[in-house]
Image (cartoon, rainbow, N blue to C red; front, side):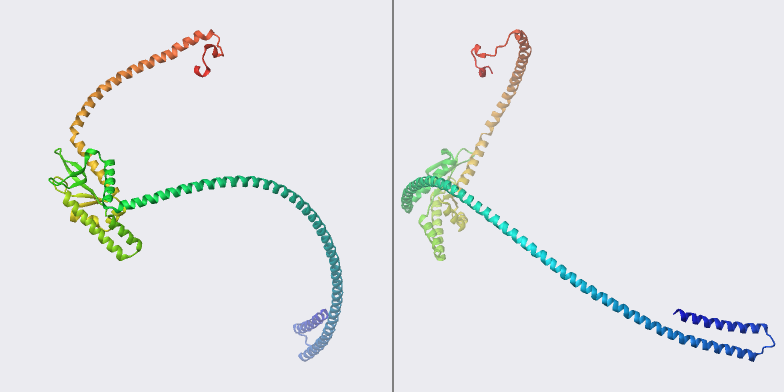
Length: 436
């Protein structure tokens, strides 16, 4: 490459020299040299220059060919050298890997043998420990079993004794309960026989109504078995005396009714689930209730001796609820002027009447109340002056007590200061707690 560059530089130098000669000749303009000779000289120089350049080009091509051949040989040598070194390195690496594998295998085999020996040793130690623990556990369990068996035997005997005693008591209570149940069944049978009698049912309702009246009203506020209609011998069971403003009173008739047979038939129809039977029994109950209401109105209602309505008492809440659900309350009120009441509603009505009694009594005695209040006011003014005088006396007594407790007590303490205190209070014949 360097020779090519030098040849090119030589050609350029020759060309430059030729050009310089031509320029000098033209500048000097010598007459001895004409244009033809100049042209010939230049031509020869150019030809010489071309031959030189051609020769240089051939030399350069030969040199390049030689250089390329040398480079190929060098590259082949380097490739062969690299391949030999790579083969040597591959061989060395394979040998090193095989050696390392053998060493690792040996180390792993040694570690396996060591681990196996360690595991066998640990297994022997664990077996010995487990055997020792099993032996100790067996001994402890035998000891605990003996203690538990002893405790269980004692507890079992105690529990069995208590259980037998409890069973005996329970059996005794059961026998007693069976006797009471037999008595109760007998009582229920007696009650059923009693309720099957119309007269007895009436007496039962009358007793219940009388008990309610007795609990709420005073005896002078109602009458028993009284004829409310003038000239009639039909006596109503109870009649509440409603006072008027003139000092007299008006009767409020209350009669107890218990249509037990029709009500029982309705309950049986409910139990059977027969809708037609229920409707028929309800219709019969409505007819019976309407008949009883008409009977009460005709026998016991006669204004102005009585109120223009009466109360029909039903002794059972179930019967009253059935009458309410069937719309009998409004029907009997509108058609017969009869109000229906059960045990709870009867008590509420009587409480309302009692409040009316109290209100009327307050109205009647309001003048007396005002007189009493006036007298109380006068006495209270006197009482105020008496209290003021008593307060002054109490204040004076407190002042005297303060003097006595303060001044006199300190004087007595000073006088007794020189006296030695005795710890034994028994000399005085009194106990310590009594002194306190």
